Length: 144
View 1: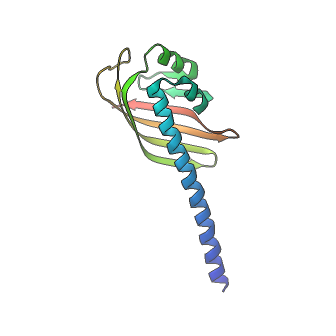
View 2: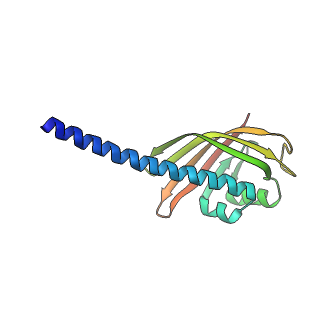
View 3: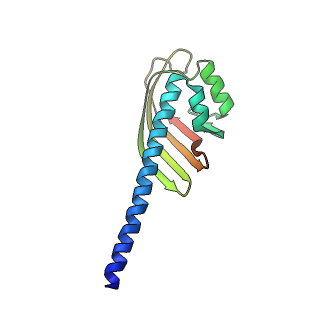
């Protein structure tokens, strides 16, 4: 009987953890999609809600840039895409930290480097959950 009770408790605990992780994973997927759509639209208001104040990017051009620099690039038309697609391949959680990894397929336009060409890049995002929810804190992107 004790063995049966132990199995029931262990299974229940496992189910609760799996449910919580699936819920968090769905939330990160939704935020990842909102972030790429906001980049595509140049929606800096939404981006400022999604990004932490200390958001930093190691961009595909070998530069480490801050929120203010990224906003400047968007306003100047240096981040401008006619098409965007983000394919999430893996999300990993550790306490209040989520790491999303995958691939992006973008078509830069206008003043953006590689305008008119399809660019494929690998990316890694670091999300941190605080009292106000998840915020994107770091990004690394590499064109291939």
